[in-house]
Length: 568
Ligand SMILES: Nc1nc2c(c(=O)[nH]1)N[C@H]1C(S)=C(S)[C@@H](COP(=O)(O)O)O[C@H]1N2
Ligand SMILES: [Mo]
Image 1 (cartoon, rainbow, N blue to C red):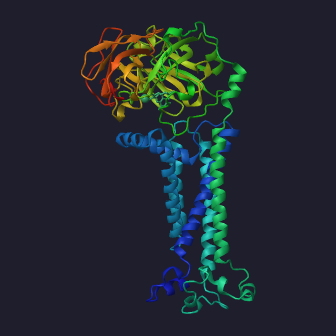
Image 2 (image 1 turned 90 degrees about the vertical axis):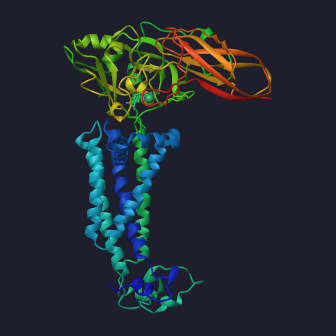
């Protein structure tokens, strides 16, 4: 097909930036516009679906693809992402998905230079991938497909029309076409308007109106494409905002309130931190570490939420939110720790939880002989395999509904989660919990087990120095921190300066063996220079924290925590 672009490019001078319009870029822009319309429409409808119809699945193709990506990501890559981006790993994933989409949409558009049908076919192929991701989400319902399907239909229409109009705009005009081979295009050299905008630009106004009135100009088509693309992006933002501003939390709590525990706990003053900079005994909800595989915390509609007990039980149990709140709740102080926490790290927090003991729930179902594990499942498909005995002994393993006296924050498992003293979160602390399946370790496994983490995850005894860090003045220096060995308790903490002798720290009170214990040690006479402080704890059974250094995988980091301090 004869076009100005082809001819100019074939001139020996090489044409350069003054060459005729680059149809490749035009087509790419059309593709990006169509892509933005597709995704924008889908995200907006997905947001409405969640917000207005109270859906619980993942109708958003963006979140579905992100979620499927997280599920399929090999463990080493996940570790690398978390190590590189920290808790911004989800932001990084979002940016990555966005850039990939732009590139793919540009390809879709460019393919339109060869054939519009091929372009549509590629769009359809990408759409199938998105639909597959939506179907693969744990709480999938057929209605979740609608936003993506409508988005694809609209996007395909936009693509078809834009590509067609671009093609029409690029055909040389019968009259007044001064942009043809060797024509005025050559006079449009450096220092000219810099506008390489298509024929109409160089055509006498009359010529445009008279014979070519119905034909689009390149500029107008690109303008429409840019406008549609912008609308698409705005729709994505609006859709995501809609999906995230759920009212479920406040509504349900206002209606039903929180249970009044039959037993409440009070934290004695002598358990609290008494040194500036020392970790607070209770971690505020906003500061509590958050670890999960969810791209965005699921917004559960308590009206539809159910908790079920299935598997090796005499009778299945199913209860709704009101029934759960009506049970006999207790309060407990429990320190939660992540298996990924490194020595001295902060993926650990302590809260006052309100919940119903899991053993009472299991008793209602009647556990059958032979079972040794409970596989808890979240609305988002995450699972944890917890030894049956820790859920049936007398410890405070809870179906928790409140954290520090407030409804569970969405990020921490609203409306209900498991909290089990003594085990790392990945094998016990299922957030947004919806099912407990009584089963066997040789029949089922939790989410992280096939991904290289141990099937069983008892918390290892750990201790951490919080102050001082960095620089201190010489003389008397207060050293302080926390130590934890959930459900065994802490009986001793010792601190050492450089290679000196171990000195016993002063322990704060221990209201429960299920939570961490704060400690302080007075360093009598810190001498100027660089020093290393090291801490080690002994648990309630008398066992000393191991010095052996181990990484988090497969069952938790170990080793003594040291800090370097500069004494001035
Ligand atoms: N649904 C769900 N629950 C989950 C997880 C998850 O990925 N999904 N992660 C677990 C892990 S690894 C930990 S350490 C704790 C963290 O709980 P938090 O985010 O409330 O601190 O939640 C556990 N519960
Ligand atoms: Mo974790």
